[in-house]
Length: 287
Image 1 (cartoon, one colour):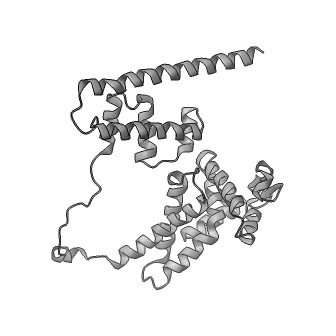
Image 2 (cartoon, helix red, strand yellow):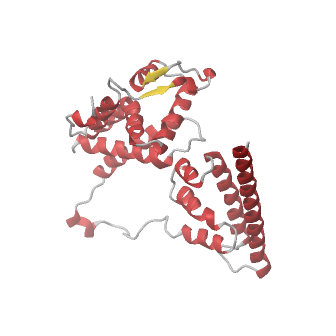
Image 3 (tube, rainbow, N blue to C red):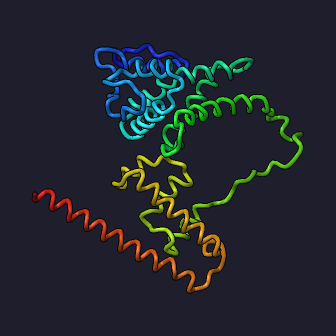
C-alpha cells in the first residue's frame, strides 16, 4: 500500500498511524537490520519490519539497553535520512502517544484532537532537535516531551481568561523572565577570539536554539562526538571569560588580547589537522 492510496483520517495521531502503516506494509515494508547492533545489546537478529520490532519491544518492557540503542538509531535516521524515518519514529512510539492522549483527554471539554496534535508536536520537536543522543533513555525523553506538550494545553485551558475581562486581572502584565539576548554575548566572544567564527553558528544553533547535533555535525563534515567535544571546550572558555568579566564588563587590554592569541593557535592547529587529513586522503588514493 502506498501513502497516496491511504484515506487519511482527520485525527493527527490517526493520520500519523496511517502513514506508518502505509510505510510498513508489503510489498516493501520499511525495515531495519538488527544485525548492525552489538549482540550484547539484547535485540533479536536479522532484517525485521518496524511493526515487528515495536511488538518485540512491547513484549520486553525491561529490555532497557535494547530500547536505548534502537531508539538512538531511529532518532539519528529521523534527523539525517529523510521524512520516512520521522514517520517511522512516530509509529514506533504510537502506543505511548495514544496512551497519553487518552489520559489527558479524560474530562477535557475541548476537542480531543487538539490534545493529540499537541502531543505529536511536542514529540516531533524533541525528535528533530531536543533529545541528546549522548544521554540515556532517549525514548523516554521523546515521550516526556509529548506528554508535557499535551499537559500544557490542558493547563492553559484551565487558566484561560476571556479577552473582555483582561483589565480586571490583578498583578503586572509585563513579560516574565527569562529575557535578554544571550546571542549578543556569543558574538562578543567571537569578536574577542574566545569563540572561532566557524563555530559561532553551530554554537548558537545547539546551545541557544537547542538544535540537534547530528545534522549540524554532518554539515560540518565531522562526527557528532567531535562536535560535542568542541562545544564543551567552548563552554569552558566562555564560562572562564564570564568569570573574568571579558564578556560583560570592561576588560583590561592585556586580558582581552589573551583570547585572540589562543584563537590564532586554534586556527593554526585546525589548519594543520586539515592538511594532514588531505595529505592522508591523497596518499590513500595514490595507493
